[in-house]
Each structure stands twice: as structure tokens, then as C-alpha cells.
Image 1 (cartoon, rainbow over the protein chains, first blue to last red):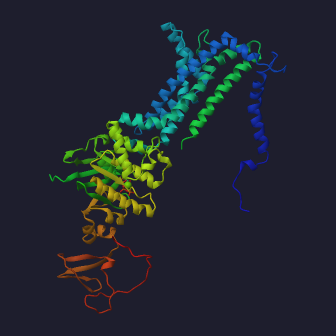
Image 2 (cartoon, rainbow over the protein chains, first blue to last red; image 1 turned 60 degrees about the vertical axis):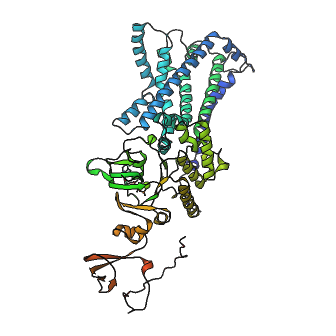
Image 3 (cartoon, helix red, strand yellow; image 1 turned 60 degrees about the horizontal axis):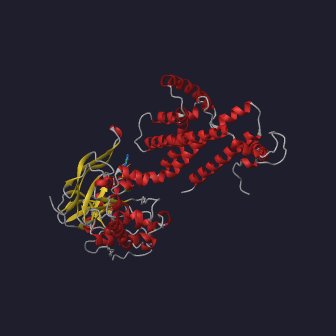
Length: 267
Length: 311
Ligand SMILES: Nc1ncnc2c1ncn2[C@@H]1O[C@H](COP(=O)(O)OP(=O)(O)OP(=O)(O)O)[C@@H](O)[C@H]1O
Ligand SMILES: [Mg+2]
């Protein structure tokens, strides 16, 4: 028989390591989901099936307002971040190469590289100064902060899509009497759309589950779902937290599935 | 200026890169292309054919020189304001649009009335025989069909000049022959000036009204296929078009004396050292010693499969 190439799957212990990794990833999540249906108020002791923690969470005004706040912030932040990211991606791929391009690229992706806690502290200090100047206490700070760290998550899929696009399509549009704006509107944008949607959804999910920056930047009474849950953990933990987490998980899984379907399909 | 000239390039230079590393893709090219003719740019890879087309289309600006369309200077006009359309080598069909939408794209960008867009699109679909595929996505078409869509899309806005950059090179031999005939038919039916790029000399000779032979960024000769073939201006053209034997010799009155001493009868107006170019079909094999014959030896026989038939 011909000699085979290197194949990790044939190393001894490969299967057991793989299984261990999957268990480590999914057993906690499965446990969390399971105990969200616990009838008793322990997160460790099973006392029968019930949906009442979902009902409790649903009727809890603090949970409801935190959920609404999370969604408002995520929606605004992903919209802003996607717009900025689209322009940044066009600027870094559709212009002539320029000096400092790599620097710009690094700058755009800064949130991926700088430890989140550093950004959080920095924002806390800057926003503290702005707050005392302007007296404004609203959600704007959180939306701004979330927009900023969501940009690279929106930028990467959009840029990937732009780079994969055949440049001669834009040339062809210009050849067929399209003004630069028409060429963008009729050719570039429709072809870019899957990338933009994917970027927006990724940004949305990232904003939705942010804890560190939100915890530092929020004013009193501005809890989002994750920071509300963090607050709850400091007191007694009930399966209500499991129920909220499970709901968040479901939403995230839904969005990410859509994200993968969108990026995978179409050529 | 002569009224029948459509595109005129005057001393066009295009250099890429800066300083010492710059290359002249076009080096002082001047050519007049007549209205309604099938003009072919022929030359080896890298000689600047695509570059000349891109300058005429407006995708790039020349380093020096100017380009005129019907006598008006269009050198600085952006591509969307030139009545010149291109059939791209890669076709560059819009994947998010249907066949019909692709064909109507140019007309819609020009903001022509919807009824006109529809009527012209249908006429174009019929012209390239794609009526039944109007609603398809372009990714669901064969290479030959995509080629036709690209052609119809470029013809639909009725440009003054159509530029075709090696449009047939991606097709297999049979389809290629078909499309050659098809292209020629379309050009005659529409009366549009075609500027066609190829590096296939047979294609150039059979399809063109006139051919411009290029090498190293320069136009070597412009003429009808017959002129190019029978009276090449220089050694490059003679060697590039068809099979040619070059024999060194010295020009004398009414003949050329080859290096071996043999004498070839030829009418010419040269003196001194010359190179004689002889086409294989001009050679007749005769018994040694016959009048005007030069001694030669048959080294090898190669079987060619078929003889070519010229229609
Ligand atoms: N954008 C560019 N930047 C730098 N050099 C270029 C560029 N475009 C073309 N060139 C150079 O100009 C010369 C002519 O190129 P061009 O594409 O016009 O050749 P061509 O005759 O179309 O060749 P082919 O038959 O291979 O398509 C080549 O040497 C090429 O490397
Ligand atoms: Mg070329």
C-alpha cells in the first residue's frame, strides 16, 4: 500500500482528546440548560421538571428592562459598527495601496488585540470626564463603547467579501455607463450584502454578551442582561439565571447559524 | 481630418511604474480605426494589446498622447461617459442579475425608458439566440452562453465602438470556430466598429478587415490581412504571421544571391545585405538543375493531419 500522508486522526489518544474537549465544551452548557427546567430552587439538585423559572424571569421587571436595554444597545451598536466597518473595508480595499495601510488595518482591529479590561478602564476614565462636563448620563456611552469594540467583528467578514469580489465587475459597470455611485449601488453593494449582514449579526452577538466593558461604563440602573446576571450571582444563585442564560444562548445560536449559512452560501 | 475615422490614437505612450523600473507598455502608438470596420490587434503576449484597449475604454489614462473619438478628444473622459463598450476576457457578468438584467444594465444606467430597455433587451436576446434563457442566473450558463451574454450586454447600448479582449480564448476549438463566424455576423449586422484583440494569427487573418500587428508596445504594421501576409513590413511581422523561412543574402539586380551562392529571382529595390523571407507554400519541389531552382535537402517529413480549407 502507498504511504499515507501525516494524519492527526491516527495519532494515539486522538479520539479520547477530542471527546474530552467536546465534553468540556458542552457538558456545562447542557447542565445549565437542563437546570433551567428544575422545579426546585437549586442549580445543582434536580427536583423535577418545571418551566416556572422562565415565568419568573419573564415577570421580573429588572430582567425585562435589562433585556430591553441589551437589545437596544446591541441594535444601535451593530448598526453603527457595521456602517463604520463597511466604509473602512471599502477604504482599505478599493483605493490604491497607500503608505500606512498596515497601520490602519491594525488600528481598526485594535479591540481584538488590546485586553478588554484595558479598554474598559480607559473608557471609564474618559467617559467620567465627559459626564462631569456635560452632565449627560444616558445610554449613549454604552452604545458608543459597544460600537467601538464591535467594529472589527463587522469589518472582517465585510473585508473578506470585498477582497474576494472580482474587480472587473466594477470596471464593467463603469464601462456600461454607471457613474461611480451607480456602480457602487447596483453592483458592489448587492454583492457585498451577505458580508454586511454577516458582519452586523456578529457585531450584534458580541455586543449582546459583553460584560467587562459594560460593567465599567454603565451608570447606575443601566444593567444589561449579562451584568444583571453577574449581579445576581453575587447573591443567591437560582435557576432563574439558567433560564435567562438559556434564552440568550438560543438567540445567539440562532444568529450564528444564520451567519454561517450566509457566509457559506453563494459561491 | 478624414470623416470615416472613428477611433484615433495619436502618439500614445503608457508607462507603468516610476523611474528606472518603469516599463513602456505602449511606446508611441498612432493608429486610425475606421468606422464600421473589424480591426484586429495581433501580437505576442505582453506586447500591450490589452493596455491599448483599456486606454480606449477609459479604464486607464495614457502617460502621453491623445485618443480621439469621431474627432473629439476623449483622453480624459471617464469610461462611463464614452460610447465605447467592452467584452471582457473573463466576461465579468454580474452574478446577482439575470441574463436579461445583465443585458439591460447599460441602458438602465443611461436612464432610458423602461419600454425601450425591454424592447432592446429582447432584440439582443434574439440576436445572440438566448431568448429561452432570459430569466437565468449567469452562473447557470455554459462558457459559450456566457460569452453571448457578455456580447449582447456590450452591444445593447449601441456603442460607437466595441472592444473585445481575447473574447474567444476560453472556448474550446469547435465553439471558438462557431463564435468567430457569429462575431463576424454580428459585426456586419450592427455595423458597429469592432476592435478585437487576439494572439491567434489565424483568427486575425480570417475575421479582420484590417490588422494591426504589435510587438514591444509598438505597432509594427497596419494593413489588410492580405497586405500583412504577402508584404510584411519587417522581419517581425513576417515571422509572426504564418510560417516563414529566412535566408540571408545579397541583393543584386533582379535577384538575390544567397550565402551558398545560389541565385533567387526576385523583384526588389534594395541593395547590399538583405534577408529573404519565403512562405512554405511558395516553395515548389523540383528536380535539381531546373531553371531558378536552388539546391536543398529534404530532412524530415511531418504529417499534418489535414489540409486547411480557406472559405
Ligand atoms: N497595471 C500594470 N502595472 C504594471 N505593468 C503592467 C500593468 N498592466 C500591464 N502591464 C505591463 O504592460 C505590458 C503590456 O501588457 P498588456 O496586458 O497590454 O499585454 P497584452 O498584449 O494584452 O498581453 P496578453 O496577450 O498576455 O494579454 C506587460 O509587460 C505588462 O507586464
Ligand atoms: Mg491582454
